[in-house]
Amino acid sequence: MDGPIRVALVGGVPPTLGGGGLETQVTETRAALERRGHEAFLVARQDAPRPFDVLHAISAELDVCAWLAHWRRNPAPLVVSPVLVVAPGRERIELVAARVPLRSYGPRLRAGLLRRADLSVAQTAHEEGLLRRLGARRTTVVPNGVTPITPTAPPAGTPETPYVLMLGSVSARKRQAETVAALPAGLGVVVAGGFDGTAAERAAFERAVEASGATWLGEVRDPGAVRALLRGARALVHLSSAEGQALALLESLHEGTPVIVSPLPANRELAARHPGHVRVVDGPEGVAAALAELERGGARPAVPAIPTWDDVAATLERSYREVVGTAR
Image (tube, rainbow, N blue to C red; front, side, top):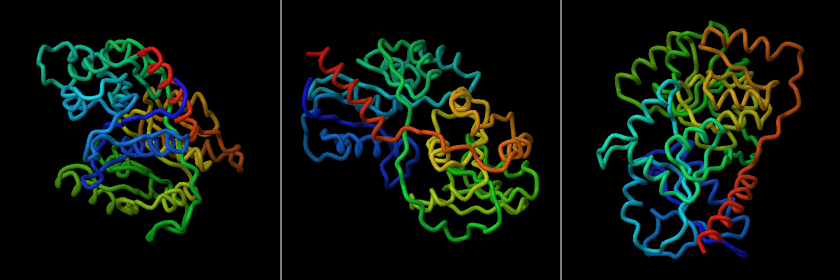
């Protein structure tokens, strides 16, 4: 297929309700495709039907599965980026659960969507292997990207003294509460992110912040302020218990700020690509030593090359043309 491609995108939480990395992925993918001259639009925000050449589902959650179960208008190739967040040790459970004979059961629906897709897109090599085990017929790996942004002023309340940063929605999965409570005194911890959890979990997090002397800035929505936070940090600490490919890590590396991460498969792949900037630790007790190791020798190594969303769109364009050409 030659010429512009009409790409319909589906997936993500409506902005009024929330959002995070996946929603950023949808937004940035759309904008980058449009910069390349393609027509890209979000299905859920259209008031009337629009024709398209390929449907790209970014997410394989129940809402997306339900929408695609009723897809009857405008048949076209289906591309799925499931963005699976499966904790280590639970992959076997996901594979077994995918065979449970309940029509409305999430893991079964996800597996069915992958088997239906003309192309399944993974963010990492590890995720690609899991997609194949779940039944995906054709797969490729397209990592996330970053948007080059000029840092502005850091958010109000950012300490002037050196700090390590935790960036992203505060939740049990991302383990900020236990990380803040366990980090050594004197590191100067800053947490930037809105809260995602119960009232009791929020109260426990606030107690941990107060007891440790950390700074919680809340949600920082201005991209320039986020980049200023990242550029000013000694390191980004991201000890999530389950993750796909965290955008905060890529943005930190793009700014030349090293990252200290939990031993997830995606993080190990990142460490293999950027050994001078990434340290993998088993838990908060390893953060201080990892930080000292990263800072040993003085000046930081050269800023690593991280793909931009325009690079992502160029790769996706080639995949779209292939699946559309095959379908025709």
